[in-house]
View 1 (cartoon, rainbow, N blue to C red):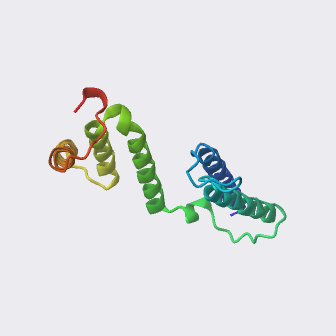
View 2: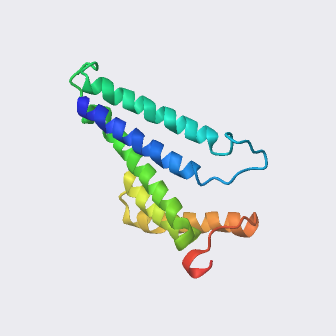
View 3: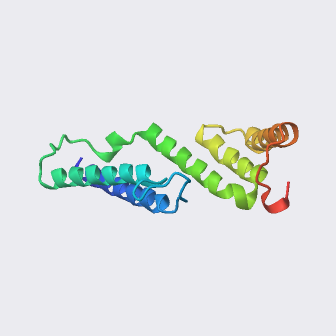
Length: 155
């Protein structure tokens, strides 16, 4: 469990650094003070998270945390890893929306998620992502007139 604690400390320190970096790019709102702006609350939470992560690391280093014999496999069972892979796919989808466009990115997301959910039929793997993506596109873009990222082929 000690290795897992150090991994958790590292993850939360990196997450805090990312939030602080992103919060510094916020534009100032009309309500402005010398200290409080749009980035104040996210930065405060990030600094508090980093502080708690450092406390965990310090307690772990000093031996104040009992080693209960659990391993990383106990913390992250197979279902949890599948959820993390799914989260990674959704993050990749969001990053690909602008360059690829809604239709291609959504087809790719659906094609990647179906095997993760245990779908093995080649027919379903080939048709479902295309049909669902085009259906959602038609409803939102054509009927509800919601602007969607166009991407490579401008559709």
